[in-house]
Amino acid sequence: MQKCKYGPTNTYMINTPLGEFQLECCSYGIHSLHHMPKVFKVEKTASVVVSDQRYPDNGYQYKPVKDCVNWLQEFFDNKEPSSLPTICWSEEKTTDFHLNIWKTLAERVKFGQTVSYGQLAEMSGYNKRFSRAVGHSMRENPVVLIVPCHRVILASKKPGHYAAGQKDEMKQWLLNHERERKVQEP
Image (cartoon, rainbow, N blue to C red; front, side, top):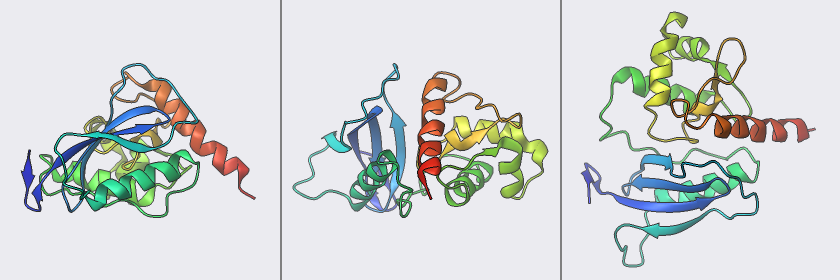
């Protein structure tokens, strides 16, 4: 069990329409959220539920777990999630640059929107020539979907890579999923 300044962390497995995600959080917020399957497969009827956890919780489940499950359910129901679950950046071993990029992306690039790597650099207060550094930040993103690195695309409007090129099909599915909702809006 890891600890952060807010107390111990726990690790949960969450079933979703895209397979299992591993969530690590403390009582304050989310530390990481990662897609686990190596093979991309969609089961549209799958519910978003906690399927397992590393340490027993004596009947108490961290609020960030419930918030994350609710957020994921709204996301997969093709609704723009009402609010972001709290992310605990206190123990994240990273740079101020990465944190700034991730926070800007999570807070300013909404469901169904995309930005280029250069645009995200500019939105975060940097020169657009920092696009490669932004790409590195996307590769290092510890909280996928919630910090929506799939919404960052090439300046040519092509999707670019996802998970260092290992999950490009998933990125395309996520972009299409969000576009579907946008098309359905009045």
